[in-house]
Image (tube, rainbow, N blue to C red; front, side):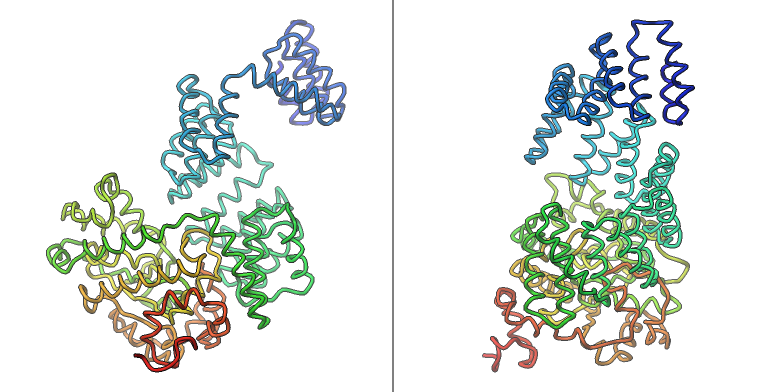
Length: 631
């Protein structure tokens, strides 16, 4: 009767609920639960003081009723009875060992003592295996540390024990999404919508899955459903803007982003998303609003990064390069504090790759891979023209354009022989069974199918795959590889002023960026040496100067006949996810060539780091500090 009364309260059928509660009270006058249910009924009707009295009666009859203690504390806060509410919280913690431990684990997480927090969650679940709160918190710790598989196991158990635990279902969506288990994430999101139809969250996850699978029209539809449920859900508005931008609906995207700001003025991500269109200009009141938010303590650190980056892009468009650099630099300083990057480790990894993938090792393992010729890998550093190359190639009738696929890295990480201690990739490649090269190639081809159509070739423009060129040659020997190159200073500064959603932690410090670029060029030189002709270098500046000639080079490298549509790449209708999505929908332009010269006076640390490469360039391409003939 008490449970049905609580359900009736949720349905708003207060008279029916009251009838059930009265009957339960008359049958069992000393039973606490009817009074607790009455407290819920009275609170739902706005009768706060009467609800407080009912919860107090429930606690008098059964002091162990923790739910009544929590609800009473919440209502006392509404009435301004802060001291009594705090006393109830202390009682709650004292009565529940698990809750004391959970609070202690939470404090440890704030101190970034994650291993110690994990031990506490483990201890709680050893003591009480069905404590779903501990399961979820432990899983969230795993998600934070990108141990998505472990988190998924915990969350699946949590929803098995408590099928109505919507928070666990939401986190499960995230863990499955990050592992690209899109079918599972979709099922979890649907369950979330069934359990909580009044929340937008399930629809937002369904939209994210649809977008990840390239079904951007479905994503927009799901975002619209989320907004029907919660019209002011700024995240859904911003997500809708991202989906519209991807399919080329620029005006729709702008409207969605602006609606997001209107609904939530502190939502910095929407400002950054507008700026990241690259072709958008803010109105003066919007610029002033962003400047005011920079001094607003309510904006979280990630929001401060986004605002500074957005202002940098805006002032660059206005030609105020000094002010633009000031904002870019501050954004990078803040973001670098949030990232972990070890430049020494990166140099050691390059050393290991050069040593492991020797000419002899590559020759000795030739012919073991999967012969499928479908992939065209576009590698390099970010902001070096890879999106333009992809758009040109995907304009060909025989090529499907995908996006930056993460499959190759995941395939490597799934091989314990390559990554489990004491193994260290890429040095551990020598431990791999020769037959495994073909298996890895087949797995990549199968995993990539969900991203492409039926064309004979498809692109994968994950720039970080440049570190895997040797591995690619072994697992997919007939794949084509194109290296997107740009003037070192344009390439590096382009990355410095680009705020990446995730990854690329080396891009937020000018010295680290320069050192990373040197290691990238060093490794690419190695691939050219041990695999001559395997990789085609395509320079952005040469594409701008001679589009037809460079298109012909790329098509020849891929074994494709020339098609005029590749020259009209900007007319190709396809989804483009990268930061250059709006730019590649315009004809070729030269305004971004040598943009670094506008910022040369601020790039001293980067120029000093890159001096070995810059000094080898023609005099016209060198910064003024390195002008003059090469010694």
